[in-house]
Length: 207
Image (cartoon, rainbow, N blue to C red):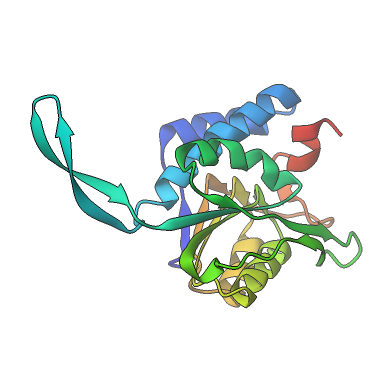
């Protein structure tokens, strides 16, 4: 598949290894999630629209670059919340929209329970934030919702993906790039990524 971009950066690999570790505390887990999110967002936004500008330096005039793309950060509640702050620090003018999806534990399909519909989705590059791309159901539903709002540019950013989730998202939305820290082996019989890291929401929020 041409739309999956697992990071090859050694810092990402290092931090992901610690994130996976079972004895990593919620405090450190949240810190690592923020750091990984910023690194992945850096890679995912390499093609943002820009334009040249002239800036005055203490020694003269330089040709600079400004980002002209309007950004929206779209965390999937609740686990996606931990990815927002570090990316927002990089892009402080970005809008933040929230999508609430929970997984039916029997069917493993997503159920929408909250969404704050924006008025300018068509004008923004939407960064969909969800740590785990497991079955792919939630990510696919979130992308479908964003498209129904008029979004034209959507990028998925997550920490770990399973091949099943990548395949589902690619099948349903083949033009959406998938940026993750790593792609794991498979899903188990209860829909968790193996080896994965457990439940990202529970580990962030000590629940």
